[in-house]
Amino acid sequence: MKKMKIGIASLEQQKRRTMEIASGKRTRARGEPRVWFTSLKSAAEVLDRNRELLRLIYEKHPDSIQELSAMTGRTPGNLSRSIKRLEACGIVEVQRIGRKKRPIAKTCEFEIEMNCASEQR
Image (cartoon, rainbow, N blue to C red):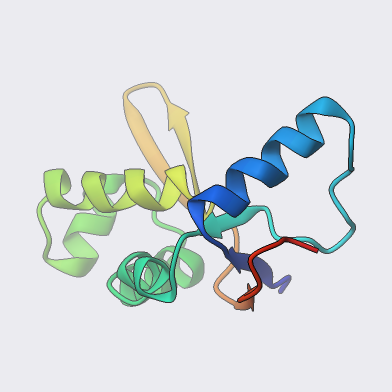
C-alpha cells in the first residue's frame, strides 16, 4: 500500500508555492505532498473523523454509497457529504457508474510533513 504524503503549511505558504510552480520558478519535488492542510487540526478533522469510513471503503470495496450506508448505518446523504470532503482532499475517488457512485479509497496510510518556518523550502 502506498502512503499518501500530506503537507501542513499556512495558506500564505501554500499560495506562494502554487504561484511559484505555476510561474515556472520551481517544480514540484519528487515525494512532495500533493494534499495540503493549513493545520494539524484541519487534517485531523478530515482524517480522524472519517478513519473508520475510510477503512471500510479501503477494505470492503463497496459498490455504491447505498451499500456503504448499509455497512455503516449512516444515511446516504450524510455519507455523501463525508465522501465529497475526502474526494476534495484527493483521498477518495468517486467512480460514477450510471446513477451509482462507487467510493474508492486511494490509500489508508498517511505521512505528514509539516514546515514551521515562514518560508517554504
